Length: 436
Image (cartoon, rainbow, N blue to C red; front, top):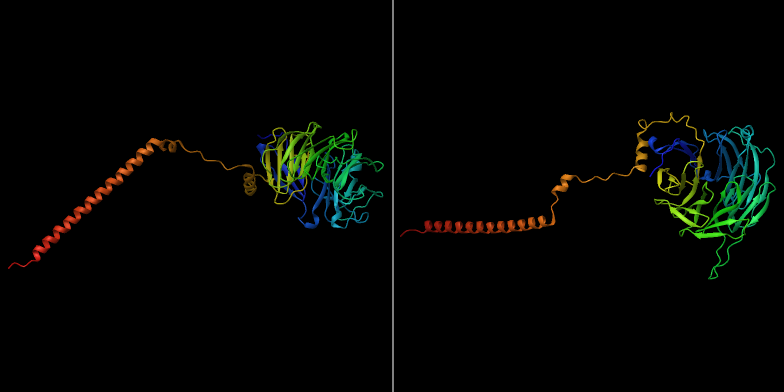
């Protein structure tokens, strides 16, 4: 089953690929823009986007510890900053893993500057406001950045900011989930590990992903662990998880919340994805189709019943949230680590895109992804000529009798030939005997 949408929508993938998805009648999703060059030193570690109609922004944290702020409309770089002057992030083991762009209500201020939250693997967090200038120059901070440390040991692997942008959530390997107040930079809550099981085995702390359930409530959030466990926390109830369940047998790699406030989408390292009612822990259903690689990012569209997923199998997939059926898939020829929706995608400029007649190669690719090979049906003529079991037996008996008759006829012919040769030899002998 597929959905038909009243308007197209776009989403961004980084290294930066812009994919446009339209309704079913207008064709399959296709790559319409490519920003940047694929380099190992510029591997994308974290992304964040301000999804709005006026002055949208996209922030990208790369492996070389640079942060680029781009315009998702045309891909122009509006700011370039580095954390090397403020934090010790030159080491490869201390890359930026958490990034968030703060949305501003005033559009005039949003066009001149932006505010960023960054967090490294070692827990070095900072908030700074930068000025949006030309891409040829390095952007400078408007004021001194606020720097603090969110953990004393371990590695931060997940970072999330709530919808009101007042609280931040951190967790990772050897780091329990903790919530910080971004106004005064203080820790307000810290989780507690679950007790030992019946065998006395303690599960080490290793969080891989986390998300808030609702935009306007920072007290409830869901976290995924490396031991394929999904945990629900409520900071107003207790420090330990109020609900936990196992999902398959591989680590949880991606979590996303639904707009209803109680459903979540889970993806693991073996390519399994499912929707779960977090109130009861009951699985609502798995998404049909098997992904051949680890799922690294799941995003829910803010308006349409669609989610996007990507991972190490180099495919971007669109799913229907109601039926959990695959709508379409695009092969992007590289490992995709992050995906973002642009819900305010403008239809202007769509007519300028190349049509199908002008780009036959794109048609071939989309047909290979979307359309499956058709099976030829057997014609009625062939069905009429197919013999039954009784007819087959009769025909086999007739063929055997024919072979026997042919064998007998052959023997008679050979015998007649022998007799003819003998008579001819006798005549020759009679002719050769002299008469005395």
